[in-house]
Length: 450
Ligand code: TAP
Image 1 (spheres, protein in one colour):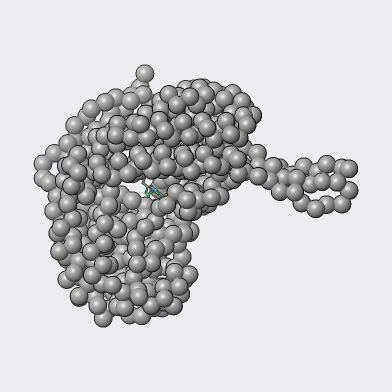
Image 2 (cartoon, rainbow, N blue to C red):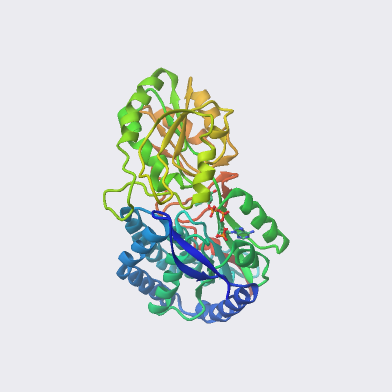
C-alpha cells in the first residue's frame, strides 16, 4: 500500500503515515456511497435530522480530541482549533434543521396540480484544502447529508487527520456505513476521480483558483454542478473618519490569523492618505504584540506555516519589497515566519497575488472613489472590511466592493447561518446560511392531472 507522511509544522517532525488511495479504492468508496444514499434519502426527514443531531453530539463529545489533532497536524493554535471543532458541531446542528424545511412549492396550473420536490443529487464529492481542514469539510458534508445525499470527502494530503476522525465519529454516532466516507490520497487521483466518476453527481471544491478552474472544467465535461470556494486578496479599507485605533488594533488578526493561510485574509490594507502615517504608527505596536509561538499554548495567536515548501513560497514574496516592520516568530525547527507589513503600490506583485502567509500590503488612497477602485483592482472577490463612522459611505462602499462577504467596522466573515462565498476568481456559488441544503438538491416538477 502506498502511503504519505504527516509532519508536525511546529516541529518539522514526521509523525504518521497515511494510506494513499488508488482509483480503484476511490471507486469502491463511491460504490458504497451510492448504496448507502438510497436508504438514507428514503428515511423520514425527522430520522435524518435526529441522525445529524447525534453526529453533532458525538463531535462535541470529542471536540478536545479533534482540536488536539488539528494542533499537531495543522499547527493551529489550540484556542482556534477548539473553536473549529465546536463550529463543526454547530454546523451539523444547524443543518439538522434542514430536512424538515426542504419544502417544495405548489404552483397554480390549469387542469391539475403542480408540485415541486427537492431531490438529492445522490453522491456528493467534497474536496478540502489544508488551511481549515475540519470547518471547510463540514460546510460541504453537513448540508449535503441533510438534503439526503451521501458524501465522499477528500481532505488535503497535508492535513487529513481531523477529517478521518470525523468519518469515524459519524459511524460512532450511528450514521449508516458508507454514507459519509473519508478517502485519503492525492488530489490528482482521488480528487480527480470525484470529478470524473459518473456516480458523483455534484462536487464541492475549496482550494486554489488554478486547481478550481481545472475541477470546474472536468465537471463541465460531465455536466456536473460544482461549488467553488477559491483564493482571495481581500481589502481592509480604513477611511479617515473611521475608528483608527480599533482598525489598527484589529488589522493583525484580520490577516495573520492562521498565519495568513486564510482565504478571507485581509491581505491588503487600504488607508486614506490623510491618516496613512498615523495608522502605521498605531499598527506597528499591534503587530509587535501579535503572539506567534507554540500552538499548544492557550496564549498563542499564530502558529507556524503549514510546510517548509509553503514557507519558501511566502518568503519569495518578500524578496526586494519595502518591509515597514515585522512581528516576531520562534527560531529553530518548525515552519516559522515572522509577520511582515509591506508598503506597496497597486502594480506590485505583493498587492496583486494571493500570498497565503503572514504578509500584508499597505497602500494609500485619496477618496471614496479611489478606495473602491483599488479594492476592486484584483481578480479576486471573496471578503473585505471597511472602517468608517459615516453610514452613507458604509452603505455605498459595501455595495460597490465586488466581494461576496464584507464587514463594516469588523472583520467577521464566517457565521454558519449566513451565506459565504466569493465573486470573480474567488468562486462560484455560496455555502452556509439558510439556503445551502437546497443547493444540494435538484428541483423536480411534477404535474398531477385532475
Ligand atoms: P489546492 O492545492 O488547490 O488543493 C485543494 C484540494 O484540492 C486538496 O485536497 C488537493 O489535494 C486537491 N486537488 C489538487 N489537485 C487536484 C485536482 N487536479 N483535482 C481535484 N482535486 C485536486 O489548494 P490548497 O493549497 O490546499 O489551499 C489553499 C488555497 O485554498 C488558497 O488559494 C485559498 O485561498 C483557498 N481557500 C479558499 C477558501 C474559500 S472558502 N474560498 C477556503 C480555504 C482555502 P492534495 O492534498 O493532494 O494537494
